[in-house]
Image (cartoon, rainbow, N blue to C red; front, top):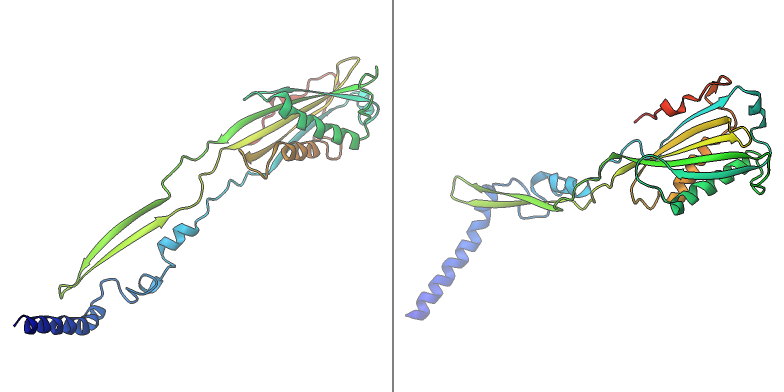
Length: 254
């Protein structure tokens, strides 16, 4: 008797397996394609895939250089680009910029001065001019906060014939939070060593992401120095002799 019951139970299970798929296919709560690769007609091109491929938009200011330069109308400006010159640097406003970091800017300015016609090998010459640098930084956009890389939602659907379906949507965001966007500003003033008169001055700024391997100190310094001394000693503004330069009041656009 037990063998007959077992055989009957096996036959009923087999019948259910043979008859269930068509019914489920007819009333599938998730639309065509459920149970095969992809969800419904969208497949893996739906919201899950979009989240996985999403890229954070980087700030449009990254890598852009802003420059302002001023030259005096005094006769002494004729000496610009000639003779010996020394280079000095200090930290400007914002976080302290140490000598090790400032060395990269000094080296970049020395190269730019040589290209402009100066002699940087005789810093002690009595007729030498002096190039004074200031390097400063400020945070334009704070670093993004850390977030969970995985999130999701679930949904249950019950058909009119009693069939039910369960769906789980998992959003995977593998992008890293963006670091702080930082503005680096390089100020340069060229003075007559004997009189202390400012002959030329300017500043250049560039926005970069903190800790970005593409924007090390050397590259930032070189980019700013080249921008500052492009077509030296020409400048965007000429300051009348005897008047102070407006550079202290000139702030770069943010």
